[in-house]
Image (cartoon, rainbow, N blue to C red; front, side, top):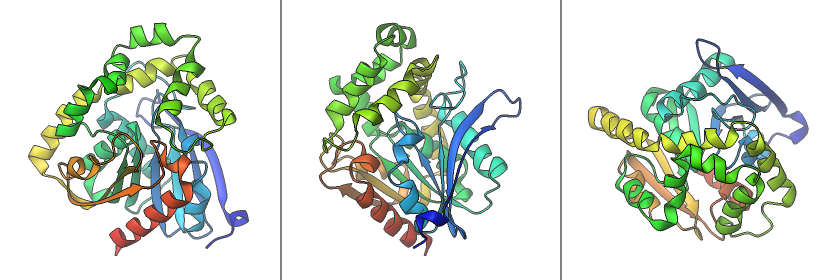
Length: 299
């Protein structure tokens, strides 16, 4: 294991589109001699700050750890359009391949909305991904997605799909609003502190941030159509897929069947004593689980 003092931490912003209209904020943690690369895609209402507890342990295990704020979140630009996950996958691909000059196949990890982005990336760039981990999200294009968004408990899908209403009703109440998600979906009460909530609140108080998050949601039905078309034309993912999430969360029990709709080789692993926010509630367990799965996927 590499010592923390030997790890290089770099924060930056980079243009990711040919017209130089969208910049992506990112953090990269690099060990002296990285042997593999993992890209961590955060959920909502979050930013790359989600990975703060796991980025150093993963880098100490030999990974180059890339953590972007996807389009519309955190330090990234917030354009009016481009929130379909196929386009957003192109943003991440440009960051990894062109800005950071990573040549080898990568491991993908998505949480919450980041899983919907990870799926589109894996479908679009199949030969460039060695493994994918999908956590805590109904994947667009699956039967479970269609069922989940129709449930009363999935109200946020339809609410956020109406950006004008959502922005109007949450304006000036952003901290209260995002805190509601953490209150309802956290199993470990001390996992996310008031200081952590302040970080997330500031991110979503920024001009255009709530609207951008809503646009990510609003495009999910389009993503479902896109994913079904790609799966029908090119088949399921052939790479190893880890279907994971909190064992005490509301989605537990659905991950394997859902992921088997999009991938041929699926391993399910529920994280014990954990709610929705896996990397923040159980960071050590998450790190160990991911390293073991990805090591096996690479052999």
